[in-house]
Amino acid sequence: MSMPFYVSPEQLMKDRADFARKGIARGRSLVVVQYADGIVFVSENLSQALHKVSEIYDRIAFAAVGRYNEFENLRIAGVRLADMRGYAYDRRDVTGRGLANAYAQTLGTIFSSGGEKPYEVELFVAEVGDTVADDSIYRLTYDGQVADEHGYAVMGGLAEPATTYLREHYVTGASLEDAVRTAVQALGQGESETRVIPSTNLEVAVLDRTRTQQRKFKRLTGGQLGEILGNGGGPGEDPGAGPGASAAPTGPDDPTDPTDTVSDVPPLENPVTGEPTDPPVAPPAS
Image (cartoon, rainbow, N blue to C red; front, side):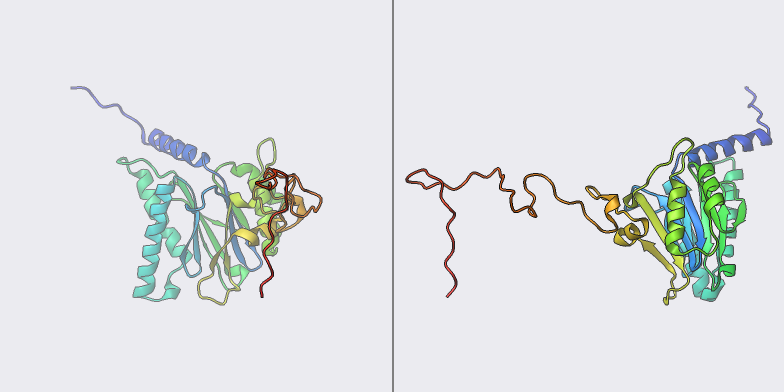
């Protein structure tokens, strides 16, 4: 009978933590920034269907990095918990702190359990209040630890360069436009170079306390995001031409150039003589 190998609890926890951190670092970074009227989430996301940032309840948003199937399960569980608590008691009883504690218990149990691998995810649970002082941002790591963030925070991918940039450029009480630009520039920071991320590759959402609706969550997409960043990032668009400006047509088929007569379509010919002729013109309507 062979004896099982012994692994100390410290080594086991270290191996599980290294496994989770490597999985999270392979993803793209996500930035959360407080601004004058709420909280904005900015992430580089090439998918138009799979979201990293979502609404949980009226004033609460959820953001995550890591394995999509794992944090999507957590998001759905959070929505169900918030709905049941709001229905059974009162909508005001659903708080970001309560959801963050529930997520922390779930992640901590999974991490310490030896029966399954740890979740390769990190989460933000944010709640917007009536004032800036009432806003709350909770960061949850793969092992269930909870941190209360203030002003800004970064998780996933190359978090260190983005955090360093925000530490130097973050301004308290900035406008939404300035906060989005700062967050996008932070996402573009690398270890050796800075990237310019087009708006079409970004996922941006806000918790806006100034909205008259009970639900404060909304997404910034399309032209609105392009106007904030100063470029639309679409194919054939000139970033320096200003918001919403399209690239000028070029080549021999430019409809704005009256002297452009080059075309691949041959002129009409007289079927009898074979000489070029003008196209027929319809008579005026009587």
